Amino acid sequence: MNLATVGGADAEKLGPVTGITAFNAGIFLNIGLPGPFSIRPEVIYTVKGVKVTGTSPFPFTSTVTVTYVEIPLLVKFSILAIPGAPVKPMVFAGPSLGILLTSKSKTEIPGQPTQETDGKSDTKSTDMGVVVGVGVDLDLIALSLTVDARYTFGLGTFDQSGAPGPSEVKHRVVSVNVGVGL
Image (cartoon, rainbow, N blue to C red; front, top):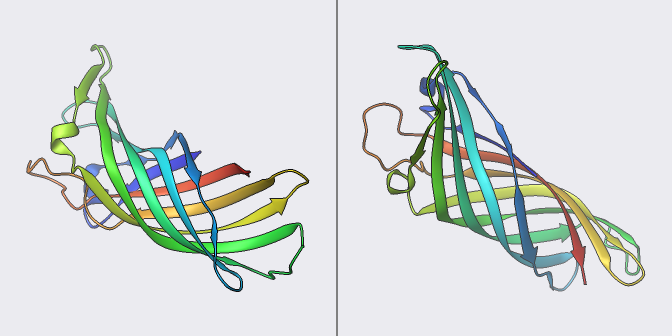
């Protein structure tokens, strides 16, 4: 589950913004290193975006949803790495590359039909970010369960429209994930 919004120098210029609740799903591989460290490459389908409300020149609500295939490369540190312990708390961090799939905007104006716009040509094709998070690995009998919470913040603006107005707007996403390891 993603709780997505935007940040950056121009985010407040958009007007009142609220986050959107969105979806993510993916796969990961845990590559053990000596000691409590491991490398965790992931491939995730993720939805980011924001809801903007305004009153000028008339009341409106515009919801922007942007989907990516995101590829984080995380370094994981298992806290209290006791060999054979079934519960392993962890912290992790690393860079992430998002590859744009879709970018859509849905604008609602009272008394008017909803306007849907494809914004893919106005959205950068890649989104670089940084992921930081905490979680726990639970070793069960035949498999393992991973639960984590993470914060992904975009390093660059995703707008490439060149339109006047706010342009330094970056993705900000809090995610809660549950995974099964084989």
